Image (cartoon, rainbow, N blue to C red):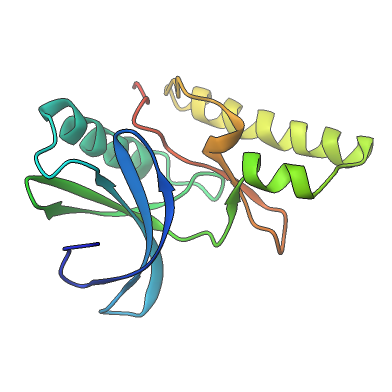
Length: 153
């Protein structure tokens, strides 16, 4: 499934039309990471450029509210974006099984607004704000934004 030296595949987190996100273990330190790879063996130039751009923007936005980009690794004929594994689910996966009280909903809305405000304050337009691009930790209910390939600086 994953042909990336130094990383051991554990499970598929998300399979989209262009990228696939895989939960892996980084062998050098045993850290759990998420590796985002192009689906195609020969990805287009724009797919590779989008992964590089996502890496650069995420590195610029280093903050606890943004999923941290750890590395950009060469893979096949493109790049793999390695991010921290927050151990969470997308908000769209988590919400149906976790109904929120009005107070919890408002707290979540304030937190999401704070994240988007931070990103925009850093001069970045995300262009893909949706519940599936927010990751929530089921244990702590902390939320982080996935830096999407649709970022503009």
